Amino acid sequence: MTKELIISAAAFGLFVVCPRMAGMTHILKNYSSAPMIVTVLLGIVISIPLLLLMVFVFSKFGVWGALAVCVLTDLGAAFLMKEISFKAGLETFIIAVFVIIGVKIAPLISSRIVK
Image (cartoon, rainbow, N blue to C red):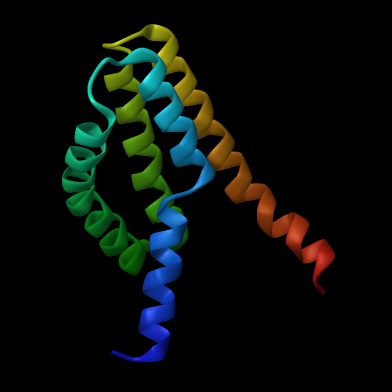
């Protein structure tokens, strides 16, 4: 393994555990009685093919294609969460909207700071 691969993989692993994930964990804890550790482990297994799909779409269509996949998975999460609680589904949807806004605004802000 190259140094670049190890650093990139470590960064990706750290990025997957992000503030958005903390928000989703909070929603799951508040609205579900399912054991959190089992939920997380099962969710990891379910997410592997979805992550591979996102990478494939990214390689073919770039960041906007990958974002489209992510938006669809977020909407899917919101749709599923509404089965537990409408409020949980709505909160999941709101988190997704803020992520989309952040992706659009982040380059604009960073280009003004770093020239």
